[in-house]
Length: 513
Image (cartoon, one colour):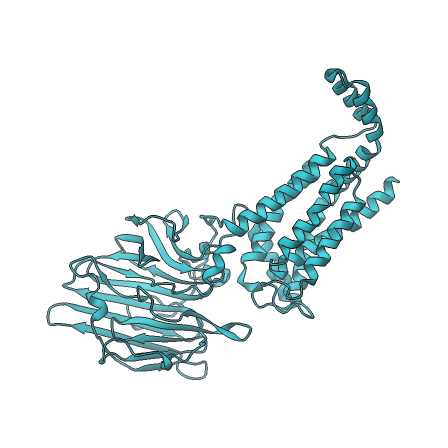
C-alpha cells in the first residue's frame, strides 16, 4: 500500500501539472460581480477604463497608412499610448506604460496585422471596402494626465453622399477602458473584430494558458479558440469577445442587441468579431491586464476570462487570501509562504495519521513477507491472515492513500492561482528572485526543492523492495527538471510545502520510534 500511495500521488501530480501546463480549460466558473460606479460622458456610451500602454518603438516611427491622405491620431494617457489611423478608422499601435518585462514595455499591438483592430467588415458585396476609406477626424492627438485633462473624445466620420459611417471613442485617463459608438447608415450588415493579435503580448503563453480568441456566452461559459479550431458562428447570447494571452487581453463588450459573433481564420490568423446590423451600436473596449478585481468591477462578466480551472471554487478563496497577506506584507513571496502554511494546517491531523500508518506498515513488512511465503499457494488464506495481521497491529491499509488524494484539489487550485494571477507578474521576492512569475534565473530554488524531495523520501517509511525504492528515487529528479522552467512562485510553494512535510515527518518518526 505504501508503494501504491507514493506512485499514485507522484503520478497524480505529474498529470495535473502536465495537463494544466499544456491543456488550458475551456470554461470559467461564475463569480459574483459588483457594479462599478462610472461617470457619464457626452457620448451615448458607457464610461469604462482603457488599457495601459508602453512602447518598444515610437508610434511616429511606423510607416504611414497606405493612402497618402491618411494620418495618424495619437492618444497619450498616464496608462497607455495608442495610435489610430484615419484610413479605416482603425487601431494600429497600442502600448502599456505601467507594465514592463525587464524594463521593456508590454505592447498589445505592434502593427495592424491581417485584420486591423476595430475595422468594419461588410458581409457583402466587398467586405474590405470600409478599410480603404479615409475618415475625417476631429483631432490629431489627445493627451490626458492626472494633472491635466482626464477625458478626451475622438470622432471618425466618413460619407460618400449615400453611405455614412462614424466611430466615436471616449478615452479616460484613470482606467483601461475606452467607450466606443459605431453608427452606420445605408450599409450592409457588418462585423466588428477585435483585430489580429490585439491584446496578445506573449503568443507563446499557450504553453501555460490559452492564447488567442475567446467568447463568453449568456451562461457565462468561456470558450477558447485557436489555430486548430473550425470556423464557428454564434447567433445568440454573446456577452463579449476578446483576444487574450496569459496575463493580458483586448475585449469588445456590446452594450446593446447584436446578431452574435463569428470565429474564423483570416490569412491563418485566428479572428473573432461581433455581427451587427446597420444603425447605432455602443461598446466598451477593454485593453490591458487581466486583473480580477478590475475586470469584475466592470460588471460585464469579463472576470470570467481568468480561468482558475476545475477547482475555481477553491482557487478564488485562496487568491483572495493571498492578496490579503500581500496587502500587509508588501511581498508576494512571503505571502505565498504564509499561504502555504495556512493551507497545510487543516491537513496536519490526517497527514499525521497517514504517516503513522505508513510507518506501521513498514514495521510489519517482515511479517507480511512471512505470510506471503507461507501461503503463496493459497491466496484466500493469505488474504485472510493479512487482514488479521492488520487488525492485530492496528494498521489501516488505505491510511496512506486517502489523505494524499484529499490534498490534490487544493494543490491544483493553488497551482492555477500562482500560475495565472497577473499580480505575481513582475513581483520580486528576495535576492536574485526579481519576478515570481518567471523561472529562477539561476535554478537555485528548483535544485533545493529537489533536494528536499530526496530528504523527505528518505525520512518516509517504505514497504518497497530495494529495486522499487530506487525507481522512486527518480521522482525528485523528474520533478526538479520539470520545475526548472516553472515560475518561481510555484517552486517557492512546493519548496515550502516540502520543508513543512519534512518537519512533520521528523516529529512523526520521533514519536513512533
